[in-house]
Image 1 (tube, rainbow over the protein chains, first blue to last red):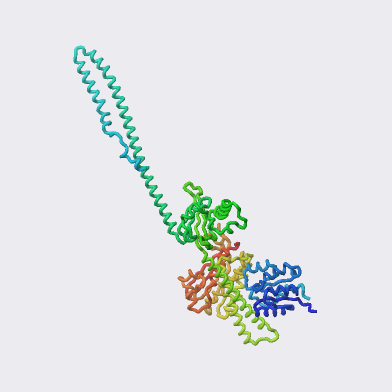
Image 2 (cartoon, rainbow over the protein chains, first blue to last red):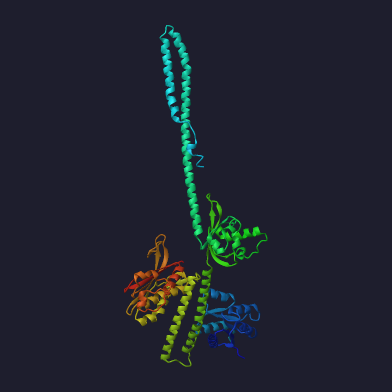
Length: 128
Length: 485
């Protein structure tokens, strides 16, 4: 059985979603699903219970913040780690993300190296 | 009033005859008495006759004395009367003058208030009942003065939810109005005045966003007589501001997202270990990356300028070593400076120089000054970065030694031997999108936001940004920051 950390990627921009997926793989993780809207991300999270979710903040369906809040409210998913990605880089944006329950917040544009490091950091506890 | 006190209406005897009587009556009596005495004394039984005459003369003298006293009293009364008439006349004139002035002043005030048609000027009594309602208020709220004055409360024209403050309004209308009015003037009552946006409700059911200045009004004795509310309709301005915010936010998102892709995939390609790039390919991709970064900076600058304009720019204060910031700025500019053949030297205190500030923003300000200096300096020129501690007096002068009343500051001095800024343009340097003629003439790239941002950051830290420049000689920017801000 694959013991690598399991990661869910959600971003409505195809190019960014692929870029994040590549970075997650570079970090030594498995991508259990990559989806384009928040509602789908939440549905997959409930069935797959991934170790980490990398969520874009601005998504159709439900925003990354709403997904994060919903995950924290349910015992089954409350323990999932969440990394938010957003074009909003102001201190207020970051504060909103963290108060929604995110473990980390990375403003766009991010460097691939920076994203890889953050994913490794957030999944280090579950690394086989 | 004037008629009552008018002197011609008061009838009094002429003073002249009394005066003459006083002088001639005693003299006449004395002559008569003397003639009688002489006549009688000339007779053989003169002694008896003289004695009888003396008895007859005595009542006459007494009469004359009384008469003199009465005449003196009459004179005194006459003088008092004249004084009173003069006083009355003066008082009447003063009163008339004051009345005229009051009328003129009231007329001036009324005409000024009535001339204001773009602002609502509403005056109320202490309980909020409208007493003054100018044409601006008529126009803004759609109700004539006669329908409002003395019959309506100003709270009738406010969105109730803004005044109820989340609490359920009371059932009694009078109490509800009183509570809402108290909420409306609460800040002005506490602080003496209050300016903020309120929502006005017009007669035809529209909602207006109005910036209202609320101040208390006092009467002649200094007692509070009521409240003034001067309102400016900001509905369109606020809508435009919201649109601008949304636009900036949209642009920010729409530009950052593709830039994320460009920079991210570039990084993947350039770091690909399996298939290393040729030097030429790496060089081309470096150009792509440099320009993507330039676009990214521009987006960041635009966003930041919009935040400054909207007053939504906040600092994250911490202890920052400015020496580190200056060294980092030099490092950032090093490649560009070398490419242009510009020498950059740095002089900072060995032990560093710590100020309280936002490291990211201070770094951005310092980068802007250094990159500008490099950009505007021709090949063979010099850029000098100096960081020096000092003491600034209340007049803004900085000295090396501490003096009474001075505060500790750090001065970052960025000097170049560049093209310079014409003296007539130096006042516009901090205006968004302004570009000096020397920048345009020398085709120096830029959009004119760097100094606007640097100035905003410096000001937000309680510091100052000064420039000295001579065309063809060079420019020196001095950023002075308080050490303990």
